[in-house]
Length: 357
Image 1: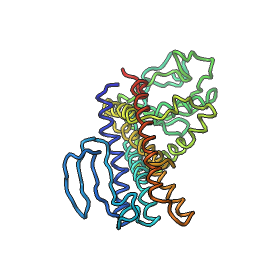
Image 2: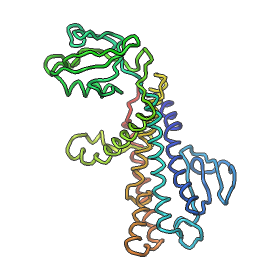
Image 3: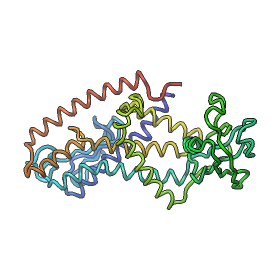
Image 4: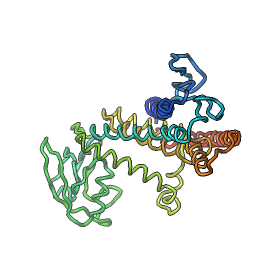
């Protein structure tokens, strides 16, 4: 994949995702009457001071990765109006709001993406003597549904076909602007050569040359966006079990760095550019929002989840852990995370998620 697409993916996907996270923290701090000394677009060093309002400096910084929030007295409860001196409820609210903003953004982005719809899947060729030819399918036909399930991608079509091998299935297709229903019986393994053919015997092209999109109405898209959210969160939470059971390989479950995320986002951006459809880049942005939100909620020192853990311990104990000790834990955690980040960046460069073309 082109380096330029990876850089583009970084700028148009990853930077806004991180900025959304920080805006969540910033908004919650303001609502909680916690004094914020600086909100920065990008990471330091500072390029220019944009404005100062309500005691908060708004700055533009040189490193184009999201932004940051610098609350007053982050680790010092003696600072009046600061973060550490706020109530447990206020601190908890501020800490979870970063991930909350990412989840809300993912929900909205999924909703928009589903109303746009992914590029339709079109039949490019029909193989002689295949179930598709016997059923009268033609090149140019566009798949809309299989067994009543909307065909959003080739994976959905493949799953329905393979699950019903040897049994008759009903396909809804679009032909010359008209919806047509056809029935066929997918072949079972052994009845075709998988290296040259498939269960129904068609070649596919995405996006469809007809320019059709598989769009949803706003209400249906809203329901489906919730389903997409749950599917992604559920899959992420099941990864350790799937890895231990051998359902996925260590390569598939490997953690990735900002470089790997940029590669994936760049691939989605390239796909959207080539198809003229925003669905790939939007869905990837939503998925990255979910991933960032879940990662930050992990109970690891220096992450939001690690700080939330200290708030919960304080609630159970009835008194807070000494600020100096908590601060030291987070410093050590940050050093460990930085070391891990360097290793992951090296891995993603040497063994890229998206192999270079």
